[in-house]
Structures are given as C-alpha cells and as structure tokens.
Image (cartoon, rainbow, N blue to C red; front, side, top):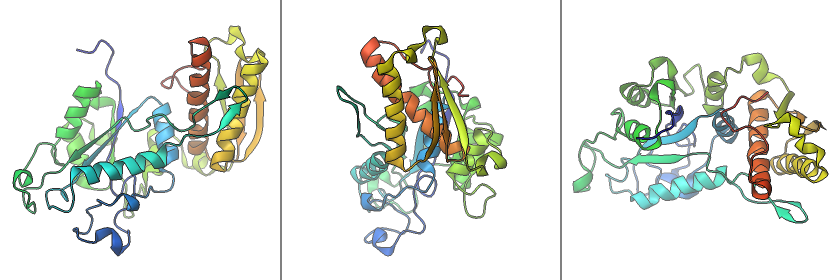
Length: 306
C-alpha cells in the first residue's frame, strides 16, 4: 500500500470535453461511425484547455482522462489509432523549445500535465469485433476506469472532480465515489460551457476575476531567508524564463518585479490564464534550479499560489 495520502484528481472525458468532436468536418468520419475519432490529424483541442490543465495541475490535482472508444469494437480502428489521437493531443499540450541562458537550455511545456489516459474499446450493442462485443466495467457509465485510476495512482475520489459532456461521464464518477456536487457537465446547453469555465469553478475564480483583463501573480521562494534571487544568475534565468514563456505563447507582460526571494508578474490575462503562466514558470525554473543545486526554488505545486 502507498505510504503517501491519496491525492485528489480531475477526471476528464476526452471527446467534446478537451477536444473537438461533434463539429469536425466530414473527412474525420470517413470509414467510421460519426463520433468515432480515430484519425489523429483531427485531434484538435478546445480553446482554453491548455491553460485550464496547467492551472488545475498546479493546484495539486492529478489529471486523468477516461474515454469510451467503442469505435474500436466497431472495427473503425485499433487501440493504436486511439493512442495516436491521444499522443497528438499530448503533443499539442506539451512543447519543448527555447534557450534561456548561454550555458543552459530549459524545456518549456514538456511536463506530463495529463498523468494518464484510460480508454475502453468495448461496446456490447454495436461492436463487431468478437472479443470486444461485450459489456465491460470500464465502459462508462460503469466506474471501472476511475476505480482503476484511483488504485493505480493512489487517488481520493471524495476529493476529486469529474468533467465531461455526457451524463454517463458524471454517473461513472459518482459510482466510483466522486461526490455528485463535484461533477460538471460541459456542453453548449449547460450553464458551464467548457473546461476553462469548469476549471474556474473548481479553482473558485469568480466571474469578475475571470473577466478582468489583468492579473498579478507571485512566486515566493521555499525559504525566503535564503534570498536565492540575490544571485544574479538565478534572477536573470527566472526573468528570462518568464519572458520566453510569454513570447512563445503570445502573452503580454505588463511588468515583472523581483526581490531577493520572489518574482511578481502583472499580465494582460484573466486569472485562469495567469495561473497557468505562473504554474509553467514554477515548473521550468524549479527544474533548472534542481539540476544545478539538487533542490527546488519554489514550493511544490500543491502549495497555494499567491
């Protein structure tokens, strides 16, 4: 049994929750049933998904995708095709580039924001592949994928959330022990339209904060008395990393202020996106600092941000 206490998670449906599906062009459905996304070139993330995932991850949640993929049972493709679609989405979320110091390169957006993906290829009614034409405990609304994730990743369903576009997503989570009040349906006919809106709800970002055009966020060193940013090399690297993230993502930095133990950025962004920015800055500069000193610069992700 794990020694660490169970962690909370965000369980996510895939199609029409993190990526477009219902409104894809006809070419996406050639030789497959409508809705069976098995062509990776049509794996397109919704706006705001990357920012929502980064902010939720930095708030201390594990991120787990659980998806029914009955198209495999219908012989529209294989699990290799499902994995290829997942990999395409992973590549859209995780990017690797930028040299931030003459002697150091720093990978940006290369952490695994989504911890794992669970896919169920069974379908008892429309399946034609003999060994997949069956009901299965992993197929939503059954709870199997979530209960498996809780066991394998040491997750606490009672402190977790489920976000999906279908009632079966929510029912699967409730059956696995996620409180019904912590399940969110995102859809055009739902009060919560998308994952970005759901993330704001989970993170207690109110409508005024969500709409405000500028946000100020701060990172404080683990031990402020060490005054790590008094070291010019560390300070310049942290500032360069913030600038690189902004340039790469098209973010306008209004101001950056550093002290000997903190960095504060005022950004031309609403709060959710600003939290995603500072989360990425935390990860990248912690990775750089750890490679040089064997210890983190900032508190770990599950500690609250200012």
